[in-house]
Length: 184
Image (cartoon, rainbow, N blue to C red; front, side, top):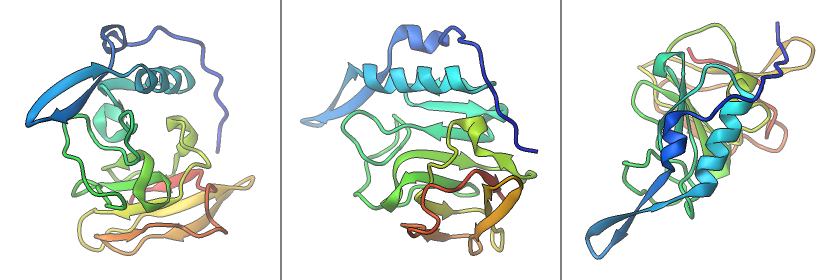
């Protein structure tokens, strides 16, 4: 059953107090600068969801790291781990044995990643309900992901192909309708 949650404001995690960092390449050297906007978004997500833990300057994990939300670094369109390399726009970047939902088409915006088979998971638990425009299934061979819309009950929207399948845009009929996921 889909549930609504009203969470109380809670203090930001210790990482938030230290400030967020982004890495910029400048003449072969790396420089770090605080990124208040990414940290503000991290703080908002943590306030709206339960059980999340900030694990890097731009990532939150739930379920002992089996679900990870990655927020784009300042000035970047696709989401990547702060220590990860920059890839060309439109490049899917879901880690092997994970399945990922992306906020915008062409694998841009926030990225929500799942690594374990579960029953249907409510995307509102991760502040990602009605926010999916592209996806990448990079799970093991033959493993499919099923995505659902909540219409009073779970209604299937799409099923991914087996491992190493993707869609850079889910199409107008399914855009921003995903409310649940079964990652295998």
